[in-house]
Image 1 (cartoon, rainbow, N blue to C red):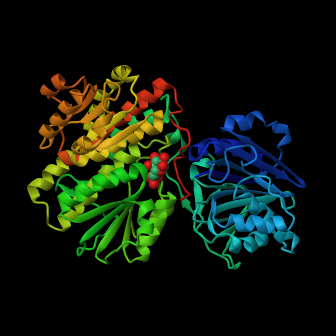
Image 2 (cartoon, protein in one colour):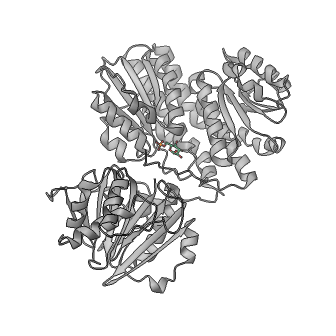
Image 3 (spheres, rainbow, N blue to C red):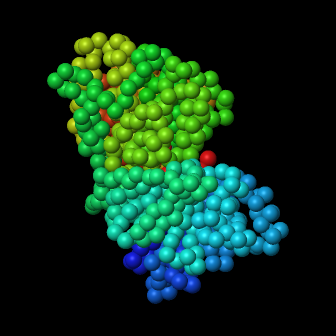
Length: 606
Ligand code: G6P
């Protein structure tokens, strides 16, 4: 949550900070700010709203300097406003902060009683005052001052600070909020996410909790809280920034939906031995004694976890449970040593998910991460990692990251099933054939779901929507409702179709349409009954059905047909009409599709 970009080098900092902020806006976009400094001068500007509003306040000739820091905010403490935007200043000090300082009330009282005046409502501003006070109390450098303050802070943070008195450096510390250094030629970048500087350099150094870093144009000095040197190795990012640009699509969300055939194929690439019909997951080793799986995630990734449970139970016959990360931590869970915790996070940075993973590890479980972002916090923390290979996902509403999670879970379930001898050879070979068909069938699903663009005009006056599904399509109903809420701000609910009669049916009338996931299969007769129940109460119904199903057209108002596929993989294809429905409705409404209000792509606060 919130984005940070810092620069120290030989070029003008301002344009680099602005382009970094633009790339980070997906992390939070209710207010922005930046500071640029040169010897004895620091210029700071802050603005409520998006980056454009900040830019309109900047006269570039006033912001001259080779050192600076920028911030894009997602409000936690204090409403979005100019005053609450970062950087926060105390005399010659400017700081930006991601995370939450949990004891800030106490610290604020302390610092105010020392005569420092807080002008914002944030938990972050106190850090600037504490640093100034520590300098005044005798700390010789910014780094020493920061190290003096850190022990007082409870909570999570990534802090970057600069001062016109030390204009040749930026100093930073991290604890539970990511920071990564970008090494250029005679210049250094520092950001909460590599996308902020990837157009400038792909050589990176990741900071870990407890690191305090001083960056100058040609040096990186990392120490721990006690001042002991910490050695760091650098790595190279292999994807490039054009992969994160719109390439002619009106929105990132649409581009990312259309990328799915390609990214599914990337996810499978090298992980299937087609000749021998085997899954090859050399990246991981699973204990043959494994008896139980816990799947933990948030948001869309949690819906992937729910589908993962079906895959693990049916293919590997392993008892599996799913839990929202934000609930797991406070439940005092019981974890056996024969249990594996599968933690799913597109970003690998979600605070609730990270904390749940830490808790599971503390209780003795091994952690297997499923993530899209290479070397993000979760993969670095986990015992095993499977990357989903979806490429950068910029749209806040997740699409391709989700479907690649599903395919990764399918690969893992087959892998474990083979190891546990729960899949016979014929089934395994059939599953592999079907998995390999997914990219092509994904392209077909996108083509056939495009009809929703015309269909949605019949649903303009809806008071709300209910998405119904059964079995492994119930999580897809949840995901369909979530996508619609996120992008269109409309009321939508996902429900297991069999539960509808226990309450939600009371909402149904002609202005409360139903999207029914009704493919042919064992649960098809039950879904037809549910459809009849809502039709007889006046609801307009869109069915997501199997190609060639002639009967369904007479039962509902509109139909989207999907290619036939193994039922365990159907959620991958059925995601597409959910995504496109949400996209088209939002586009017609004119909402900010890629950056919906109040949301952020990477939620790095609890
Ligand atoms: C945020 C995003 C969602 C995402 C969730 C979990 O709420 O807006 O799209 O599903 O975080 O994110 P993760 O990166 O852990 O998958």
